Length: 586
Image (cartoon, rainbow, N blue to C red; front, side):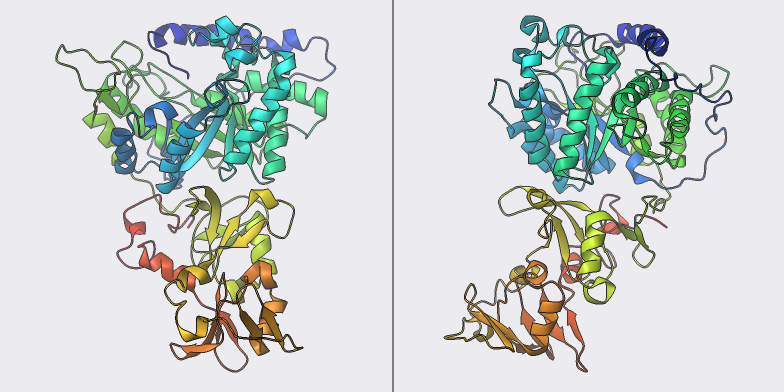
C-alpha cells in the first residue's frame, strides 16, 4: 500500500471494495475474445482459520515487516527504527525499490538510499524481499500527472519509446542487488489504471523483469503481485497461457495483501482477522493451474484500529500464517505510524506528539512503541526450528538442521562433499565484502561458498571465500610463508610465480583432483608443522595431513563461527532468531 500524506485509508478501503467488484469481472470482459477458459472457481468450502490454538510449524519468516526505504534510511529515521527491528527480531523486511527514485533523470542512477538501507538490513541477517515498482515521470505518457504522488496510480503510463529505458533500469537494479534472491514485482497492480488494470501491460513488464532476473541469477524467485487475489491472478494466468503457453508463467510465487482493515474480535461470527478466504482461494487457483509447488507471500496485512484491538488480532493471524506450509513469507504493515489521521495508524510504533500535541513526520520526529501491540509481537513464540524445506532435490541435513540446494549443492558435490567440505552450518545469507558490496553465501565446516553472479554459467559462479588468506593474515612474515627463492616445476611439483610457493606430493594430488585453482586458490605457504599436523595454506583453505594417506581441510569456517558467537554454548542462536546458524528445520 503506497501511503502519501493526506491520503485517507478509509477512502482507500472503499476503493478496494469497488476494485474487487471490477476485477471480478475481468475474465468475463477482458477475455471475451480469448479461447482459453476462465479460471476455475475457488473451493466452495474454504478452510476457515483455526478456532483453537494451532500447533506452530515454526516458520520464522512470518515475522516480517513491510516498510519503505526512505524511512529506514540511517540518515532519516533509521537510528530509531533499525534498533526496533533488532528488538523485535524481525526476520524479513519487504521494501520497495522505486524506479522513479533510483533513476530520477534519464540514465542517471542513484543507488545511495538503497545501498544504505539494504546494507543495514543485510548486516542484521534480515532477509530482504525487494519490491520493484513505479514509473519515473520522465518516462510516462503524462509527465506532469505522473510526477504527483497522489495521482500516479491514475496517470503513470510507460511510453513505448521508453521501454528500452525500463529494460535497462531492471537490468541495473537486479545486477547491483543480485545477492537478493526474492523479488516481488509491483505493488497492488490492480490499482494502477495503465498497468495492472490492463493485464497485458502488467504481464509484459513482469515477463521482462522475470527473464532478466533469471538471466542474472537462475535461482532467483520472482513473485507476481495482487491486492485482491484469485480473480486478478486468474486473469493474468489466462493472458499468460495465451501469450506464452501453459506452464510458462513468468513468476515463481504469488504475493497478496489480504487486508481486513477494521476487523474487531468479539463482534460475533467467524474470526476473520485477515481475509483468510482470499488467501485460500488464491492457493486453490494455483493448485488448479498445476502451480501448487509455488509459494504464496503475504507481503502486507494489518489494521487501522486502536492498539488493544491490533494486539488481539495479531496472534491468531500469525498462528494461521505459520500453519500454512505453502506460505513462505508474511509482512505486517507496518513498523510505525506516519500520522495520527484516522485510517492510517497501522504501526507497532506511534509518533511522539510535539509540544502542541500534534503528530506528523518531520526531521525531528521521534517514535515510541505502542506498548501492548509492540510487545505482543515481540513476545510471540514460534516453535523454532521451522518446517523442512520443500524444494525438490534439496539435501536435508538433520545433524545441523540446515539444507543445501541448487548451485551450492552442485559445488559441494563436485568439490568433495561431506568428506572434504563437511556439513552445512548455515542457511544462505548475505555477507559483506571488503569493497562494501554484498554476496550471497553459505557456510560449511571447511569452506564458505560465495555466489558470484557475474560468473553465472561458468566454473567460477560459486567460489570459496579466501578463508586461508584470512586465517593466515598475521603469519605472512613467518618462514613457511616467505616466497621461495627459486622453483622449478617437475612431474611431482607445481610452482606458482603468483605467490612464490609450490605444491607437491599428496597435497598436489589432492589439489589437482578436488578442483584445483577454482576450489582452493594458490598456495600461500610451504608445508610445515602446525598443532602437530603437517599443513599447507592456500588462499581458500588449509590442507591438513592426518596420517595414513588421509588429507582433510581445516575447519576454518566452523572455527570462525565459534569465534563470532554464531555457534557453541551461549551463542547468539539461543537469543536471536535471525542468526544464519539457527536450525532451519526440525
